[in-house]
Amino acid sequence: MNGLIIMENMEKQKITLRIFNDDYQIRTEMPEPELQELAAVVNGKMMKIAQNQSALTPSKVAVLAALELASELSELRQSYGEILRLAADRNNIDQKGLKHD
Image (cartoon, rainbow, N blue to C red; front, side, top):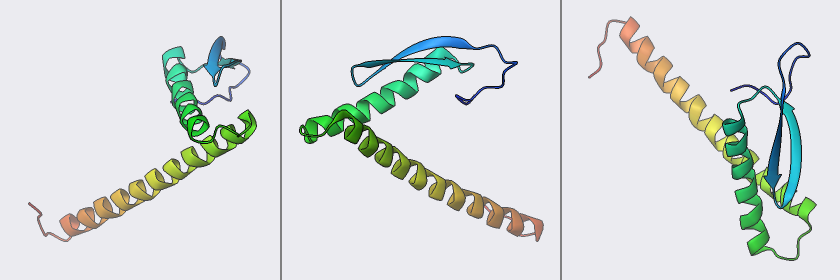
C-alpha cells in the first residue's frame, strides 16, 4: 500500500474524499479505490460515534474515531507479533529436526 506522503518526483493525482459530510481534496499516488475504501472506514467510524453521542462536535467525533482506529491497529499489531513468534517457534522446531503435523 502506498502512503499519503509522496516524493516530489512521483506522479500525483487529486482525489476528492467525502468524510462526515465534508469534502477533502488529497494529492496522492495511492489508487483511488483504495483511498476511497479508507475514507469509507473513517466515515463509518465517525457516523457510528455521532449516532451514539449526538452532542459531540465534529472534531471530537474525529478524535474518538482516530482513537478507535488506533486501538484496532494496536490489537492487529499484537496479533501479528504473536503470529510471528509462533512462526519463529515452529521454524526453530523444524531446524532442530523435529517435524510438525
